[in-house]
Amino acid sequence: MTTTDDRTGAAPTPTGPLSRIDYSERIPNNVDLAGDRRLQRALEGWQPKFIDWWKTLGPALPTKDVYLRTAVAVGRDGWAHFEHVPMEEYRWGIFLAEQNPDRTVAFGKHLGQPAWQEVPGEHRADLMRLIVIQGDTEPASVEQQRVLGNTAPSIYDLRNLFQVNVEEGRHLWAMVYLLHAYFGREGREEAEQLLKRNSGDLDAPRILGAFNEETTDWLQFFMFTYFTDRDGKYQLGTLKESGFDPLARTCEFMLKEEAHHMFVGTTGVQRIVEQTAELMKSHDTEDVLPHGGIPLQIIQKYLNFQYSVSMDLFGSEQSTNAGNYFTSGLKGRWQEARRKDDHVLLDMERQMNTVIDGSIAEQTVPLLNALNLDLRDEYVADCANGVRRWNLALENAGLEQRLTLPHEGFHRKVGTFAGHHISPEGELLDAATWEQRAVEWLPSAEDREAVASLMVPEYEYGKFAGWIAPPQTGINDQPVEFDYVHLRDEALA
Ligand SMILES: [Fe+2]
Ligand SMILES: [Fe+2]
Image (cartoon, helix red, strand yellow):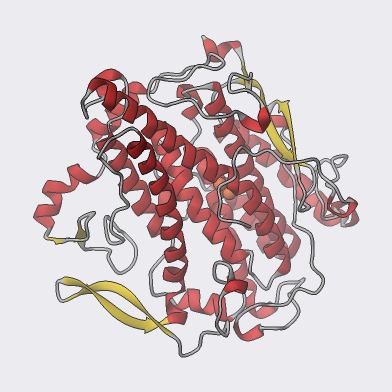
């Protein structure tokens, strides 16, 4: 797994009989589901409930079919196949990366022992919790993005939205498979609940805060795929290291799909910035709204918002749970194998920022307790790459304005900075000053309305809404003006 965002989702033809996926089954899979009749029946019982959920809370725009990629094989050399398919007939299935029979637990107190093919009794509850939390985020984002198709800036972008949606649906399948296959009746009950909790539902919301926020418009969608999907990438990266081998193999394959989601976010924001820069230059003004563009200042506010709510997803900087998950071998660090230490981390320390006596200062803490922060640091560095790329678009346009990532303490509801008022520059403020100035830093109702006013659908092949530049290339070597989506007549009415 590289940290580079996947370009267009294209992949060469698959090879290798071992990694082939069986598409003759009702549930496509490479886990020999037919060899376990009970499990197969249980999952076939869950399948219609999933389809019901997709029809009720999945994409609202009526489509005939969409040019989607489907996994064909999970091997190294390729796994993707592209064709126009009706979305409700997408072949959601169960795909695990290939097994390495010599794999051992790479960290914690079980270091060096063979990786577990069954759930160790002592870690059962914790493992199920980790899987449920991950599983809960996958359908949540589909729900959040349900109505975006109605205002798609192009057919190309519409296709990418739907690709992300079907793959998040598949990621739900990935977690539900683990629950059904390894956690008995309790697991099956949790799988039901994953369809019953819904994003923003007052009685049964999704587990994590950021997944109950509404995705109001396409600027937020691109910020979401950039910042929040990227949190997903890092969480999956830690589960890919898990001593529980089926979880590790599932997450390894999910990460391959996730790369395209990163691409959608990175290039989506970049294309908006390019268009804004173009309008700023040609009209010699920062106020590009009357010219049909999104002002840079509003882009910055959306960035501030999505980054800060995504930072919250990493949990508290200091967490004994995170330390226990590590010591137990359930959840490793990002790229654990590349870390040059003992992979046990007892008695090791690190620095972290916190608020001490009215100012932000460093504190020394046990490393084992600060693993959420360790992961977040990796995430922040990755986030900065995209911002650099977006700034290059501004620089290339000869503009002096730049986008920035806000301070780690800005607008936080979780962790050491929660309850404090910190500006994007990292200045500690009193409540009154914060109240007064927050409108400079976070999207206001007016900002959201301004963006919403630009969100009119552009469904003509090869055309793009005025607030976003076209992409450099199409998907899977197809032209940008390709008929990626066939809409139903109702959608055009
Ligand atoms: Fe996902
Ligand atoms: Fe994703």
